[in-house]
Image 1 (cartoon, rainbow, N blue to C red):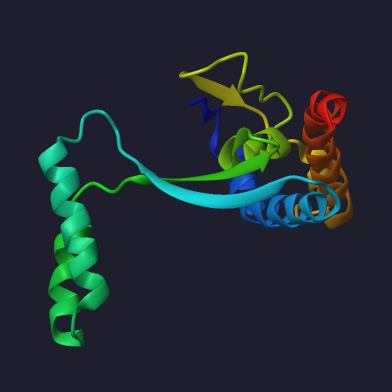
Image 2 (cartoon, rainbow, N blue to C red):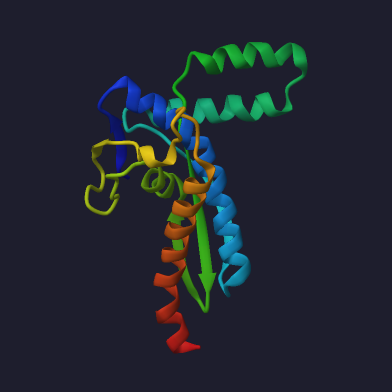
Length: 173
């Protein structure tokens, strides 16, 4: 998976302002496209661990998280403290699209990066870090989110994805 790298603190701060709104608009636009298409979608969450974290540690963290979900308040604090000292997986969110026996998986973080950054192309640099530039057109003159531009860019990217899926399926329908 391609990972963005920030060239400076200002770029990181701009991305921090944009990423949550980008994710929200992405999910909303995906929902709208799904409602108008013949595709069926289901979201999945997966934990991505750095290769350096041993399997035993991963299992231990998962076990503590399960215990925390069921823990009484007096036990929860101890479990939270133990988890705070351990490595954490990075969440990965995907949307699996299904239609006519065909499945397509979309990585939501990769789509968010494509929306948020002006020079992000996940297929060109797979499995490496890429120095990114924030698409500053998504910010207004005060540095806040320009919701109209964000929604327009997100809609365009989501629409392109569904348009690229349709021709192959329409021929077999």
